[in-house]
Image (cartoon, rainbow, N blue to C red; front, top):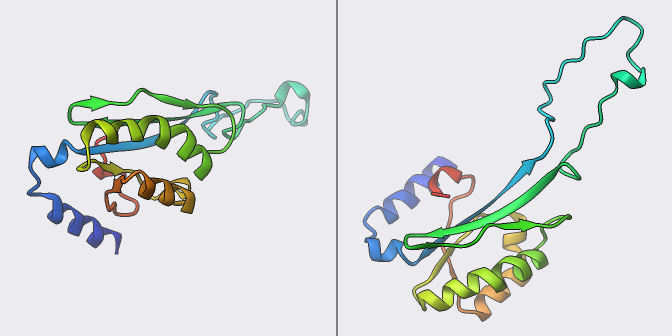
Length: 153
């Protein structure tokens, strides 16, 4: 199903001009781990010493050991890299920390032709986000689900 939707999206946009693409702000976020938790750590130990403190290893799961970043690019510009402080990115944080300070600025510079490309992550689809985008007259690009390969960022 997703493959057909992606193909339809590509066909719909294949004849877009450079001027049309120049109005799109492509955005994405990514989480980075700051530790070496690759889940492939091997510990060599003597039989019967499994629970000794010297054989314990603390593992962080995106808490203290990671960070989330967001950025956007256009044909002739880019946002600055936004590093989120601790905590979960919610619809409120997305609106307050991304849409208001960054996306609204690009919408003002490009004008009414401006199009925001964001994926279908839960914070992006919150009702308060939709209401904010509508109040700011910001159009959102239809984006196929599970299509990170289509995003140049």
